[in-house]
Amino acid sequence: MEFAELIKTPRADNVVLHRPFHLAVEGTLCLTGHHLIFSSRRQDNAEELWLLHSNIDSIDKRFVGSLGTIVIKCKDLRIIQLDIPGMEECLNIASSIEALSTLDSVTLMYPFFYRPMFEVLEDGWSSFLLEQEFELLSSVTNEWRLSCVNKEFSVCPSYPPVVIVPKSVDDDALRKVALFRHGGRFPVLSYYHKKNGMAMLRSSQPLTGTNGRRCKEDEKLVNATLRSGRRGFVIDTRPLTVAQQARAKGGGFEQEVHYPQWRRIHKYIERFNILQESFIKLVEACNDQSHNMDRWLSKLEASNWLTHIKELLTAACLAAQCIDREGASVLVHGSEGTDSTLQVTSLAQIILDPRCRTIRGFEALIVREWLQAGHPFQQRCAQSAYSNSKQKWEAPVFLLFLECVWQIHRQFPCSFEFNEQFLIMLFEHAYASQFGTFLGNNENERAKLKLPQKTMSLWSWVNRPEELSRFQNPLYEANSLVIWPSVAPQSLQLWEGVFLRWNRPSRFLEEAEEERINIIKYNKELQARVNALRRRLAELEAEDEDEEVQEEEEEEEP
Image 1 (tube, rainbow, N blue to C red):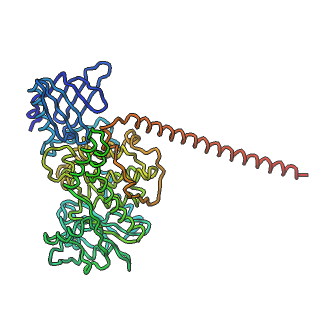
Image 2: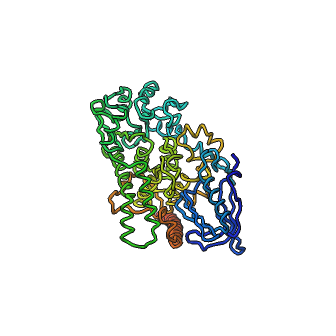
Image 3: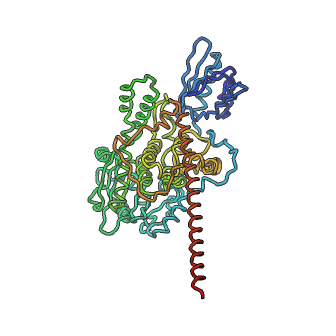
C-alpha cells in the first residue's frame, strides 16, 4: 500500500495552530506517511511541530461556516487544535489523519522507515541479553541454569528463546510443566536475592480444572527453589473467587495438598477494561476546567486510579517482604502472567535491588521483566485515554508500573540514578515511537518482524552520553539498602508530570529544577574544593611533623 493513497490533501496554507502554553500561530500544514508537520511563517521566530500519526489517539472536527477545526488528542495526553480554511480541505485532512493513525500493519509503522541522524555507539538490541544476566547470577550461585527449551518458541509462544530455571529440572520436565500452565508459561526465575539466596519466580496459572489435576514435574520445579525446611509463598494477583471460578474454565491455583510447603496469598490487582476506564476517568478529571474543588476531588476519587496504585505497591511490598524479611521464595502469577504478574515482580525488584534503581539496571529490568517476559505492548498501548473506538485489549498496565516507580522515586529521591523525565520518556515511547523496542507483543513476534535487523532500538538512542545527561538525577547517591515505600493513602500523590503537564504551565517548575541542579553542581564543586584543601592541610601538617622530627634529631646530635 502506498501512503499517497491515504493522503487526499498533502498540504494546507493559512492554518492556525493552537496548543497548550503557546500563542496561536499561523503557518503551513503538511501530511507525510508518518508525520503531521506544521511550520509557522514567522520570520522572527519560526516554529515547527512534528507529530507522529501513531501518537494520535482520536480526532474531532467541527465547522463554523467555511472554517474547519480539527482537535487532535494524542496518546501522550496532549490536545492540539488546527483551524483550517475551507471545508473540503479540512475534511480531507481529517480523514487522512484518521487513516494514517490507525494503520493495521505493523510493518507500515514509522520504526521501519526511521533512519537515525545520530552516530550509533551501541546496539541496544543486544545490550541486555539474558545470557549477561545469567553471568551475574552464576558469580553468586550455581543452583540455576540457562535453558534453550523454547528455542523455536514451540513450548511457550510468549516466552523468550532462553530462560533461567533450577539446575535440578531438565528440559523434558519443563515441557511437561508447560502443558500444565496457561499458555505454556511455566515458572521461571525472575529475581535472585543475593542477601539470603531466596528466589522470585513468575508463571501463569496452573491448569488444575475442576478435577484437581496435578503435575509432579511442576511441583518439583517450584519446590526446587526452597531451602530445606523452609516455606514459600504463592502470590496470586486474582481475588480468591476469580481463582476458584477459573477452575471451571480449566484454570485454577496451586492446591495445598500438592504444594504443602507453599502458602497461597491472594492480592487482587485490577486488569484490562477496569484499568482503562480508570485511566480515561482520571484524564477527564485532569482536563476539567471548571475549577470546582468538590468536582475535582469527586472525579479524582471516582477514577480509582490512586487506589490501583496503592493495591499494586502493596502487592509488590508483600513480595519483597516475603523474600527479604521472611527469608522465603516467592512465586507470582495471575491468569496469563503477562500483566499484573510483571508489575509485581518488577516493582519488587525496584524495592530489593539497588541495581534496578540505576539507569542501565532499570533498562535491563524493562527488557527482562516486560519485553522478554511477553507483556503485549502492541495490544495494551494501541489506544490511550481519548480513543473513541471500542476497547479490545487496551490497558495502561505499563503506565501504572511507571507511576508506581515514580511514587517510590518521590519517597526516596536520592536512591535513583534516573529522574522523572526518564519515566515520562518511557511512557511516551511505549505508546508512539520512532524506535522498534515496544513493537510486537512478545519476542516471538519481534523475531518474525525482524525488528533487530529492520528497526533501531530505543536504548541505542537513550544511552548516548548527550541524551543520558538529560535523564540523570542530580541528587543520586548509590544506596545499597532495601527501600520500603509507604503505601498509606496520604503518601500517594497524582503524577502531575504526566497527567497535568499539558494543563498548567511548567515554566516555573522547570526554572526551579534548573536552579536546584545549579545549586547541587555548585555544592559538589565546593565539596571538591574542601576535600582538596583538607588534603593540602594534611600534607602541610605531615611536612611540619617531619621538620619537627628533623630538628629534634639535630638537637640530640652532639
